[in-house]
Image (tube, rainbow, N blue to C red):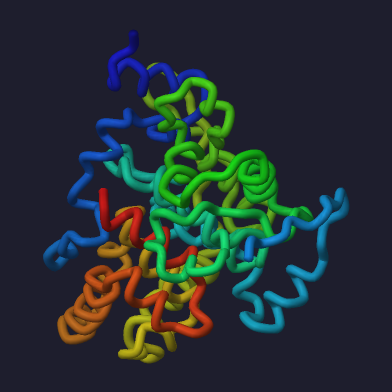
Length: 314
């Protein structure tokens, strides 16, 4: 059996630098108390009906997202987490960030929910059930046009599980070997290639003494800066003390950036006063009771809060 260190070396040699931490032990996943949503930020530094499947890419996504978010819709939440976690010059995420892999799986679920592909099962009295007890159901099986999202959507349609269980399955953390088929493989590498196609990253070879690895440095600094600014704005200029008035995508960015351990570094260039304000507002989100917030909200996306609830429990 490979140790974590040996497995890391093997994956660099065979699968590229982005697969290094895409497979973590279940013990590691459940013991990351520092990246749970409840932890403090670092110091300064009727049942839903499934529709018939379609083989054609549903272009409604692009039109609806662009109408609401403008050019922001060109990047998924997974793309944004990757860009925030990426070393722009080196072209890879930190070896020491073992949180981003799970954070990206949470981003997959939220992105599908914001595109109205999945939701939580609804029955009489289901709103009184806690988020962690309600299974995820497919609302619309039409392809999104994003390979990672469509693979996850197909998996979710095959069995009924909660948000927490799906994050574990998609991360490859299933205790049941029959569930390992649901794991999303090489997510960071696939997202990086997608960002290359979108003109934000490029592909390069970097020598690590005894072998070469493929990296993806940033070539569109403006696009990466805009991702950081959107997150900062959601915590400052666009901040709403009523959490149910915060846009779902903005709320998701805050939750996922913390879960992926990239939130604090997005504040690194802020002045002291702005840093303290952003940190204070982020902590309000992270300390919020997910069940309470979704129950009192009329239009809030339940899966956003369910994902937040999962990371709180880690």
